[in-house]
Length: 399
Ligand code: NDP
Image (cartoon, rainbow, N blue to C red; front, side):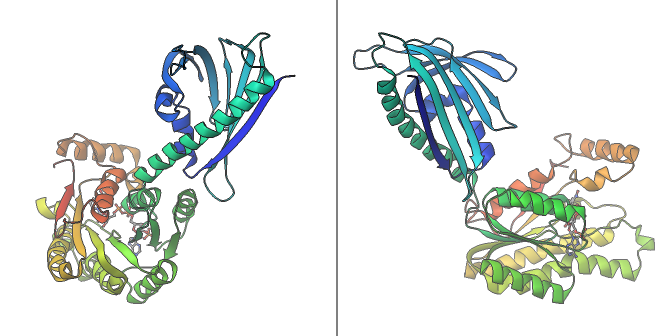
């Protein structure tokens, strides 16, 4: 009669993390309590061959053997076997991962084996022993992966409003915050594919999320947006005023309509959102305004834009003073040129010309990414920045 074990556990962590951590054989001595070492001997395609050694047993003997395993990320299954079988006639292993109905990942560990004649344990004895040990190891794996998942969830329990989240920097902030465990409400003006794909991506993250159509330059829409935050989240821990628009215009052609639209869509929108959401913010919460580094260095064709972005810095300082006594922090993040999908929408040659030009202005020799900006924003709204207020952080690679 052959031996068979079938054990499973639900790990409350994203699939990618569970998969990556449990398939990193070199780190197994930290993941399992039974292994003293795991030495990678070779790789052939997806198959890894490795030597595992147990901690010395009560007689001081160190048991060690060579195994190989082949993870298949498409089916989320792993097949493995002992190459050096020792007391086993054979030992075949299968791991299966699936999204659990109530959240998390159900990880199943199956072992099929037979003992050699004369081995210290027969099939039934080894089945009982493996069942005991597998349950212990699965509990350890669960604890370690869940701890790692929590550490990555810098914003767990935080409720954010990020304006203008369907594209560009705002989208990057929304997704980074959602992946870090926050509940996020965001808005846009124009329906379309960007909104649909954002909703799809958010569905794969923890937390509650809402993507609403609301123009932050319009007071009635801002009212609706704030009411939705209150209804779905019960309050807010951070407001990120990201939505903004910019149409370059030489100053002598800059008419009153463009000037007014720039003011309304950037500065006034930030004011409307901040004032309307203030009753939802309590002690420990914060506001982040997205400025621009060109407000500090100037930009031909951008007088109107740099004027309003400069105004945000003054608004940030004054609000920080006025709201500080309530425990509310206010900061600005001023990005340099960021590589968003807007650049990809330009004709290829023009996009390349702009990328090269902007990269050459930066000390780091590259454009920023939306993640570069998102990381600074996440820091400011997190509990790592509890004494940071009234500041402007340039995320521009030093231009
Ligand atoms: P994009 O134009 O790529 O995206 C803007 C986002 O905001 C879109 O989702 C847009 O949605 C939304 N949005 C714009 N206006 C409104 C509004 N009135 N109400 C609701 N949603 C709105 O912009 P970026 O990502 O490039 O810029 C984001 C912020 O970063 C802006 O404040 C910008 O000034 C600043 N910035 C950008 C830099 C860059 O290099 N990209 C550099 C420095 C600062 P919809 O399309 O539906 O309107």
